[in-house]
Length: 294
Image (tube, rainbow, N blue to C red; front, side, top):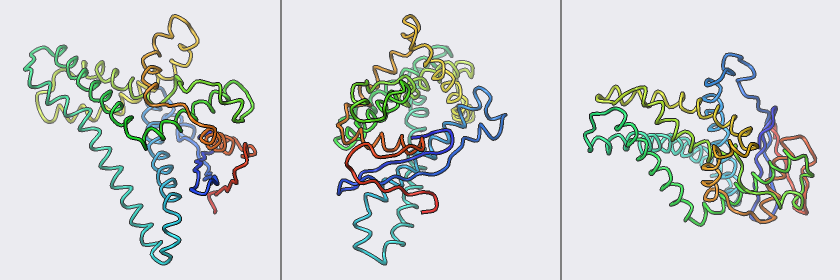
């Protein structure tokens, strides 16, 4: 969970306790006004989200391996370094695989149709990209461990709704809310897929390796435009007519968010309350807070 000045990650240990990592955080768009301009800010915020995501995954992994590391004692430092190197390599590989799967492979498949029209080429390329994305989301949702992640995703959305509605940040007050939120990252990714079709139309039909690599260079621009759409979607969701704009993203969230149980809601609320500098306790679980200096 993020606030304007900090972020917090809450993880439940195998023994039922909750451990929280809280660190100061301020987006660079606040420090450098140029980076806060429309379009530019979207690319920056996307990169920051990736950085925080990696930090959260690393912390979660460290907690999961905590007991094993304690048993191995002296091997802990060596293994910790190896795990960090492995995490960095995994992130780089995943990012490269994502670009290849969702941006390059669709180009290769579209080439098989030998389109002369730039419009036809880019529309079919976009359809392949969208199909790959939807298939990927659906297939990983079948994985038991990922479904549990999606339950925590739903807990996150419910907690944010309670905060936005100025309700008490408790499990009872949070439970009734929906797991579907217009500013969700899932909706953002869907908008990225659709926006890429519009942006690539202006680049024409790529006939050379250089023209195809140029498309990859435009990914931050696509992310920036998509971010502006997400910002608009919050206002659109409150209007019955413009709500149609956000519906596809909400429909997709029926896959990427699941109904959480109370223990998962508790974890999400603890993270949110810590990020907001509130008393973290919302249930009976023991809570340990790790600050930047811990």
